[in-house]
Each structure stands twice: as structure tokens, then as C-alpha cells.
Image 1 (cartoon, rainbow, N blue to C red):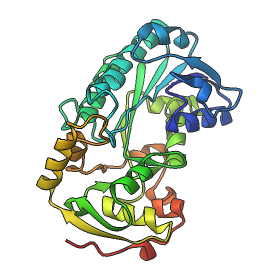
Image 2 (cartoon, helix red, strand yellow):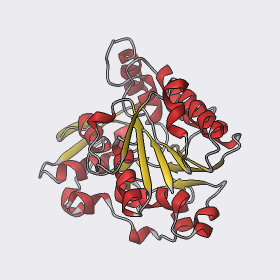
Image 3 (cartoon, rainbow, N blue to C red):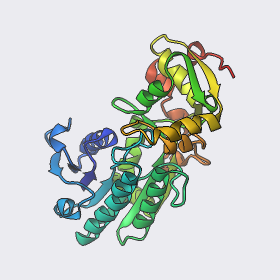
Length: 311
């Protein structure tokens, strides 16, 4: 297949392009700054901004499948404010779907987010949910994958965790009890490839029109993740509880500070868990025990990294 990875030079996109090449597919990566990509020479690099239809439309010509990957982080307040989520995730999806329909692309894979909801609590979740509606309403055959937080080399989740929860003594909103279901990049990417470009066409077609909630093999609280992340560096973490209302007040005040890395949306995101009700990895023939844990990735013993949280 000839596959266009929109946002193909980012964290997930780079790994996806390499996996597609390994499976003998033709690959093109479209991004605003493709020259910065760390990709094999076999990958065609194209320049375009998903917010500007004319800049991306030519890249869709002759493609069998498109994967839409652009995503502003929900962990940090985007430059330009929360409205940027709608410009990139929603308008970007509209433009990509329009170009895919214009060029009769057969398959469209949307990398969404766990909990995506057009009426959700945060701008990120709402924009992702509204973008899913756009994909659902398109004439192109779609698959939607909603992962929990993704970790791996070059990822930002562990960096965010260390920033929010420094070692030794750290105060976390709600005592760090928000739950996540982290999935390793190396486990997620083969699922993306199978969704649209499996070796057996019947397997690929089985995913047509489907939406999957995807999580890793275990559910961890933010406090537990912080202990693992710092435990890999032999640093303990003792967590103290910041009551959620107090944390909310502080983060809402940060909204007024130009360039502040977090704000009210990050507070709201910490009020709900990022976990699956049913983990749809079984649709890809996988079981939780086959997936890599965060502790394994960090090469740390969870028992050694664990410290008792203090209220």
C-alpha cells in the first residue's frame, strides 16, 4: 500500500513510518518541518500545515491510505491557547478528510484519544470528539483508535510526570490518584499498521468502520507513575496531597500568566481517569500479558520504586 502519514515526523509518526517500511509499504510523511525528521531515506518527506487545506491537498494524490496523527499535547497548555486544539485537531481533520475524499483515498485511520467526547470537559477532549464526528461522516472508509497515554523513547508523558511530580517530596492534586493506562509505543504502532495495511486484506477490512479504546496492560495512578519514573534514577518519591479545589485555583490562576505551561484545562484533565472500560487490544489478537509494562520499559522493580503516599 501507499500510505500517507499526516504528522508522520512526530513521536508516534516516526515509529509508524518505520513500521510501515518494515512491512514493505510505500510511505510518505507530511509535516510542517519535515527536514527535522529522523526517518529512513525511503520515506518521502512532504511539507504542509493541516490548518491550511491548500498546503496539504497535493500530498493525498495517489495514496491508498491516510493516517492522521497531528496532536497537541493535553498535558501542557498549547502555545496560542486552548483554541489551538480546535484548529489542529478539528480543522486539521476536516482538511485531511476533504483531501482524502478529493483523491479517492480508500482508508483513513484517525489517531484520536481515550475519552474523546464532543461535549467533554477539556478543549482537547472536545476537539478530539468533534474530529471523530468529521471522520465518521466522511465517505472514506475509516478506523478510529483512541489510546491512553503513550510512552516510549522520545515521548513526553514521563517528562511531564517528572515536571509535575519532582522526586523526594512532591505535592500532587488529589494526592496523585488520577489513573492512567499507559501503553508502550512499540505495542501501539503495530495495531495502527494492522488497522489499515495488514498483510491479509481480510484482516485489514475487519477493522473498517471500527473505533477502538486502547490501553496498556495495567492501570497506574499518577503517583505510582512518578515513583516508577524517578525510581529508575534511584530517587524516591513521597507524595503529599493538594486538595483538588486548591489545585484548581492555582492552575486556573496560571491561565492568566502568558506562557504558563499548564492551566485550567490541565486541572480538569486530572479530575477524570484515562483508562479503558474494555480494552480493545483483543481486536488485534493481543492479551494484556503480551504488552510491555512501564516498569519493564524503565527497567525498574516496582516494589523497590514504591513509596507510601502521605495525605
